[in-house]
Amino acid sequence: MGRTNPTYRDALRAIEERWAEFRRALRRRDQPRFDRLFEYAREHADASGLLNHQDPLLPALLSIDLEQEARLEDHGKRIEKLERQLSEVSDNSTDSSVEGDTRGPE
Image 1 (cartoon, rainbow, N blue to C red):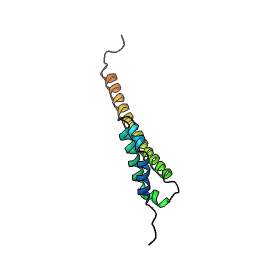
Image 2 (image 1 turned 180 degrees about the vertical axis):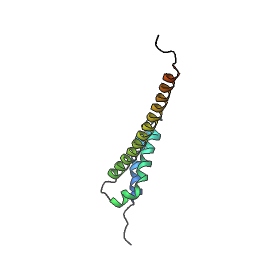
Image 3 (image 1 turned 90 degrees about the horizontal axis):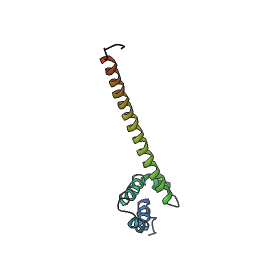
Image 4 (image 1 turned 90 degrees about the vertical axis):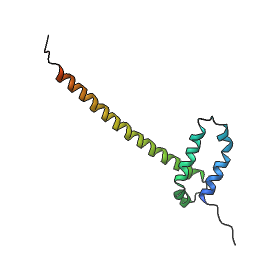
């Protein structure tokens, strides 16, 4: 039997192992962020494996970029929603203060 090529997931695991010392040197608050980046890369391992790129780090980086782009998009939508709600509250309070002012000019 011939040897088989390692899977993309195996290659990604090897990359993560090579970066283990870097991870340990990070501040504790940054270590979960580092781990999250590899989670993002694993999210797209199927597509990355189909690419069969010579350097498995490149598809991993693009996978991380895709996940971060999705998070940015989600945050942008949440901000727009909150701004609309804030605008509605502001409009309502302005309307009620104008309607409540019955004194007339002094």
